Each structure stands twice: as structure tokens, then as C-alpha cells.
Image 1 (cartoon, one colour):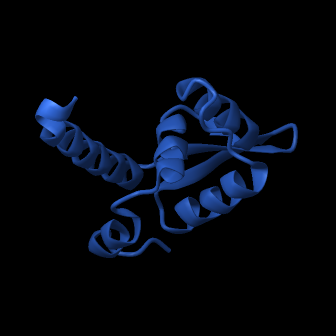
Image 2 (cartoon, one colour):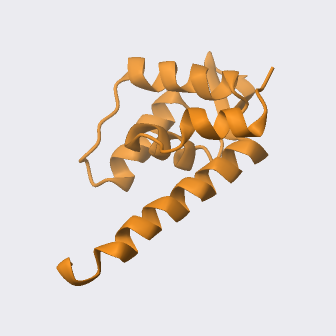
Image 3 (cartoon, rainbow, N blue to C red):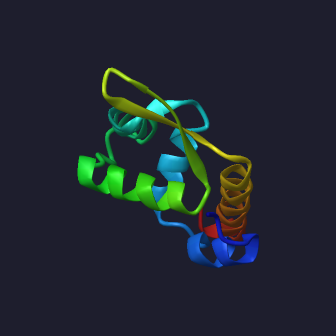
Length: 107
């Protein structure tokens, strides 16, 4: 059962870069290996997630209602972001934009 929204916010915000990219990746339905490939592509190879990290993160995200299991295809579980997950991702994106914007003259 998902916690109330304020508890979820406190648990996930600010978000780790790993968690951010996993959530971003499953705005489109993907399985664990697909997430690993997508994150590597998004970051130009800078971030290579291990299976343990991905599956532990998916378990946490699913437990808190930010993602949901959609189907199993050839023994691979597919996941997609939920409405709550999308809301958290948008809040984190706004936080990152604020940081970027406040860098101002040093960039």
C-alpha cells in the first residue's frame, strides 16, 4: 500500500541521480535490462547501472507506488511510472532546474 503523498515526497526528494534516471526511463514501459540500456544511452555511457541497483530501486519505487508492474514478457517484468511517480519526477525536475538557473554567471 502506498504511503500518503507528503511521506512519499520526504522519502524521495531530493532524489538520487540513479533514482531520477530510473523513473525517467519508465515513463515508457520497460523491464530492468531495458532501463539499464536506456540510462546508459541517456547519459552517454557516464552511468552504467548494475542489475542489483536497478532491481533494488524498482522494488522500493513499486512499494511506494511511484511505479507499477504492468506485465511479464519472457520472464522479464515490465514497469511504468504511476501518476504519483510522475508528480515526484516533475517536482525533482523543477528542483534541478532551479539549481541550474541559480548557477548563473559561473556557467
